[in-house]
Every structure is written in structure tokens, then in C-alpha cells.
Length: 160
Image (cartoon, one colour):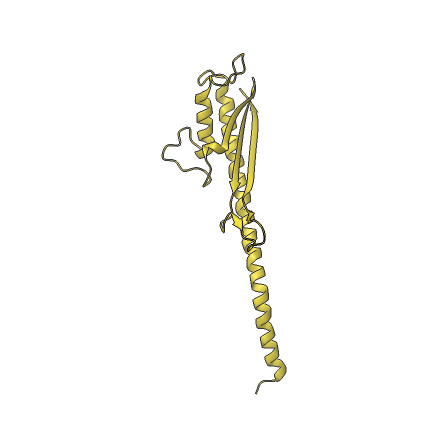
């Protein structure tokens, strides 16, 4: 025959389990999403650096056009801009049949600029969206909360 105190303890353990498990699951998922965000930021930073390195190496050689002409017009180097954008987007000079390095990254997120006559700047702004959705419902108490976090990477390099 069970002791009365023993059966109360069994019920208490079940209640503690029900209370603690959702909190632990939330912490595990939040840690995993934070790690995923840091990984995507690292990939984004590496892509920005690689694209800027490519642009700085090609900008002054004359093969794709110089950074600026005397008027500050950058239209003389559209080949360099498009190839640099492709390197940032997929890692290759031509992204035909190549996936983006991060799902959801588009050419509109990438900007290749001539900082001045001797420097090239590559900017990438990417909105990180968690796996469980891009908004958090407030259950009718106000507008939904956006969970999209803008990740921005910018590199300026001197043209070689």
C-alpha cells in the first residue's frame, strides 16, 4: 500500500515537468535560432568581403572599366558592378543555375559603389527571418510584432 505523502510527490513531479518543459524547449529553440542568425551573418560578411576583394582587384585594371572617370560617373563600369553583385549573391561571376548563398538573398539587397576614385564599397542588407515565422501574434492586442532582423555587412577596399 502506498504512503499518502508518496502519491502527492508523484503528482507534484508531473506538475513541475509540465511547467518546466515548455520553458526549456523555448530556450533551446531560441538558442538554435540565434546560432542560425550568427551563421547567416558570418556567411553574409564573407560574401561581402569576397565581392569587395574581387571589385578592388578588377576596378583599376581596365579590363572591366575604372572606378570613376573624371566626372564621378560610375556608368563606365557596369560589368564590374554586375559581376561583383553576382559574386556576393552566389559566389560566382555568373549566377546562372546557381543558388544564392543565403535563401532569400536577392540582387536588390546588394549595392556596389565607388566610394571615391580609389575605393570600392560593397553593401549587403539582408532580413533574417526565424524558421517559425516573420511575425509574432499579439492575439488582438495591437499590431503583430515583426521578427525580421536586418543584417547589414559593408566592406570598403582600395582599388589595386
